[in-house]
Length: 344
Ligand code: FA5
Image (cartoon, rainbow, N blue to C red; front, side, top):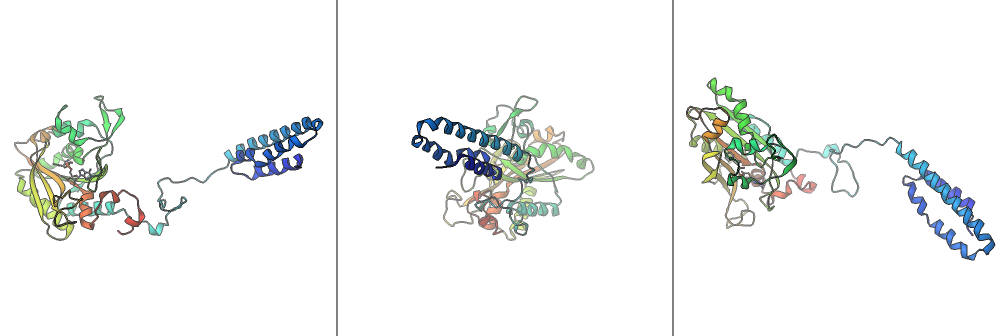
């Protein structure tokens, strides 16, 4: 026979010690008490039931008190951006000694430093932008079919034209801003020479070469007498510096509404000789789009295209890094897998 009074003391003590006091209301001892009722003489059952109800009430009251007590306990604050070890079974902070810059961050710094040595200044992009900078300033008027090539994520919030704000699908959204910001250079006889390495987003079918979130570096160069030969020479010099060797590059004519003429640069696939799944059996991996800045884009920034010409390019940084380190699948880069990241 369980003694109701001593059980009350035991359960209340359990409530006081518990971090999850409500669990005590489901204690197996309650079931055992109820199971005793059929074995009691009928005249004792009423009194026993009353004492069990009092016990339940006392435990519920204690649970209420304990919950109120726990609610006032000051918990240590957690920095949710801290580097947690996602590979451990419980939330553990990574030892600071093992933290390093992400390979993409390291490479963005390298890319930026090379362009800085070539006379370009570095600017930042933004992670939410408007359709005016994504399309209108880049010579894609409303309804232009090429808008569909840049399918990206949208917010519920809208801009002043009532269009949803967007996660930029390319760093070209910054062209108009940097052209306006550095326009004064032209009046002083200097070039506008800017790179913008930053994060970009696309609603994409993911595969070894395509991520929904990736990085690009935009380049913009405007001065008097700039021609396509300068564009090709600048990109070749950059690629030689970055890879430390000369590479087989393929330059094809292409179409972008914001450059005329437009080109696409591809690098020879480093993963195969005869075609593989990374290069979709083409033996080339598309690295960047580029071209001579369209007169309408210069005009949208208030630059006279009869006097000045310029080139622009947008290079996929993840692909640049894949080919530098022989990473056969772009998705490793954002996977947060420490075994992968620790190699760099
Ligand atoms: C553009 O984004 C143009 N804004 C480039 C440009 C800039 C042209 C300035 C002319 C003047 P495109 O969609 O081709 O172009 O992307 C450029 C590069 O970004 C690609 O060559 C590729 O290296 C990279 N890229 C594009 N989509 C993805 C993706 N889903 N995942 C990883 N890299 C991508």
